[in-house]
Length: 220
Image 1 (spheres, one colour):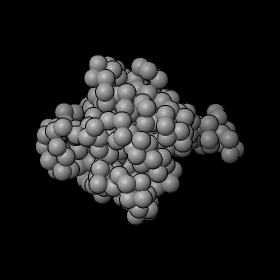
Image 2 (tube, one colour):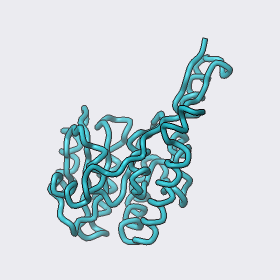
Image 3 (cartoon, one colour):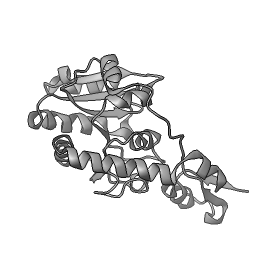
């Protein structure tokens, strides 16, 4: 009699496989705006990072749709452009060993932190300087929303669900799916331009606070 979807993209998917559009209501993901559980220093200590490290991070399942092989390829380029660059992957999944092997083959394994599954994953984002998401499919990414709510500059693949959260150049930066050089360049730009990083992070946080708070979603 009715169906809900957490983004317009998911609604379009179900409409495409035969569900009447009239039956579908979009109720977007929402979250509580809270202060970080850890300070930047505490989060970095937990992850074995130093203050001078420039940290790009991801939180989520280590699964094919996340295209983390693209993220590692991009990081291989990035760490040659940005001194003390580090990549942190928080989460577990079927591609864990293959991704570690890829980082080893590219000569950057010692700069990549595989943190595994963590109950405090969102709190550990306080250690990041930027958040990356390279997925070829999402519903509406909770980890992207959490990163935005923390005021992190976010760099995400240019797919419809991510465009529902990120306006390129305003609330984050978008790159074409699979374009590792583009991801590397945007990451280097964010890590080397503090003013840009601060602006993107603040507008991202303001967007989530304005459009995706739990109270607002429930009221609507």
